[in-house]
Image (tube, rainbow, N blue to C red; front, side, top):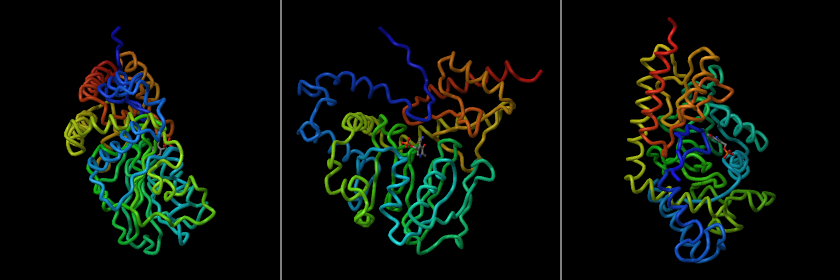
Length: 363
Ligand code: PMP
């Protein structure tokens, strides 16, 4: 029976490529002639070791990760990294943070438990609708690291260039934009990302860390929260999220088959461009984010009338365009258009918005 799939604009967990879901379905009960599902497999079996090693080698290739970096497959979500980063990296007890949204602010709050946090810049004054400039005088050259959220999922903003911090390592939360555009990993000290947007199913957290930033944790740091534990054991200190890693490997293969991250970026620019072009010319809808800082992944907009926003979200859902409601702290609408959202999904959304505008324009 043919099941109708919707265009799902959820911020995460979000759409996975249909090809990936179908491949996982085909291999669900008998993976590669093993007579069992990947879900039932020992994580130390040779069949599984092949899967995790292939996943690592694909992400290294896709992101051009230098050999001096470790790739770790962890759990606990991006939220666990809010604590793990300071716990491992705050060796002198000082760090610089950018406050560009709710998750950035959660990370900052968590870091304060471990040392002195210097808020370099904040965009809280305008409900995080922009990326603030960095005043170089505000940077602490002796900070252990500089933390920023490269794409702000709730507000629809992104850093279009990396902050310049001299020798202070950059640490970034890349949960909502990893694999969506080309980043120079060699300029970053540590990258973390929850999987449930551009990587695969929830349950996996990817960490990419420069080797010299490991082994700094004190003796009182729990074994499971020390990056070195996971690095020394190739993410196999305990049972990793095996099935999530397997599906992520299928997603990496899919990205590669489309031409890699640079090709993905072109498609994402096309998709976001269609929505922003329409928003810029609409007399009903307005974007939340400042034009220069707009995200390619999360497009936030509103009509200025809460009732009309609700009507839009409801009618869009009826038309098969689901999960378009904005986060409660911004209101309005948010279209999350991660890698797996087809160009057609965005086209259909723009057509729907045009029709809605015509029908709901003030007479
Ligand atoms: N950081 C960002 C940028 C996010 O978008 C999210 C989740 N939406 C989180 C952190 C929290 O992630 P998790 O639920 O994996 O802890």
